[in-house]
Length: 283
Image (cartoon, rainbow, N blue to C red):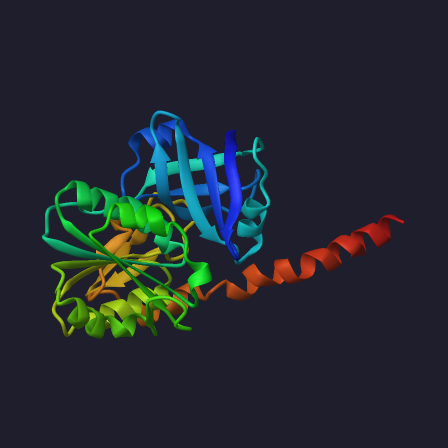
């Protein structure tokens, strides 16, 4: 069993979970992920590793509460335990000295971008971090990102902080700061990664994204996480999760991620009714 060290909501609907997992913490690298189960016989879900402490033997993940399993993870209390933490899985993000790297994070991707930005800075790169969200109250870990950044930029759709709009404003932003990055790395929702890749393609900037399709075993055996990269079929769990954003078949990926959307949402909406129904039968 893996003990819960910390569990809290850090911004609305976004949760931080720190777990004792010394074997994972010892081997973790930026860009890798773990697979968790909230309970025995429960659903296995992949979550990017946002941070780790080798001395304490802990790892931290940040996730959005969107379905029945993430709801159970979000409800975990400190000092309780979960049965499964498998990892680290996937290939680590390639960290070299590129020059100037723009690290873009949105939603849960803000957390997973932190260790990548930190490693790039340690490698001697000029690091620019850009966080985006619907509003500034959804931002978190800004101070941590600033500590490993040469420049920090924000985009909010409601204009409450930084630039107003979405990632499509990137050309204007780069013009304002008079910099063209040598590489762009994007972590976050599929829409953010797709739009970011669309924007950087005509600018001819090397762009890498961390794909998060549906996964089950995370070791390449089930084939559920297959994605189309150029003319090839890849498995995100063992070939990725990082891929060239300009080669991803985004339309296919978006459709695959919607496959079980209804099944995931229905338990959240009906579980309370089912609970009352079972209690009524007992009476």
